[in-house]
Image (cartoon, rainbow, N blue to C red):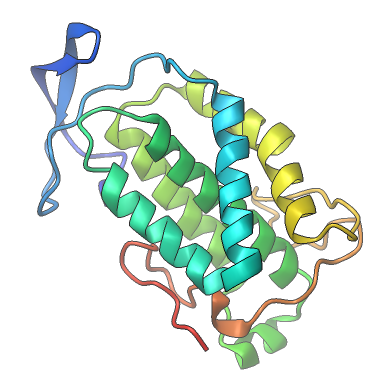
Length: 214
């Protein structure tokens, strides 16, 4: 996965609506194609995030969190190969963010000793590794800070409430926390516990390691 500090080289590439100036990522990832700076999306970002949340919640409810992680992994692997920032790739990022929010809420209610016995990552590890993946994904396409802020706003206002209520219809809506204090117990009733191995137990990204099914 490329990092935010990767060198960018000037080049030109074709967009669907004509030829515009863009950047070529100088990355060393095998199979990674040339990528361009992101342009303004021609899709409804809030609706795209809600659709992504609904799809992921359906997978998790019917097949479990392990399958949800595998779905996110496959989504990243497929759509990050595009030369342009796409609606589908943005959905991958949204799903990664949403899944981390849920697991951070669950694991934030458990003691460090309990997490260690479960072989589960701490909320801090979940958060930091997700933010690295998401930051790298946005950097790959030179997504602006303004668009990233709008993405975060849409996740908090439209994606997370829908995702949480679909998974836990009877639970009180908590306040998600993926900032520096992630892991503090949020207000509200806790959602049901998840399986220990339903989340990665190390710093590897979904593309590097999918959680093993128990």
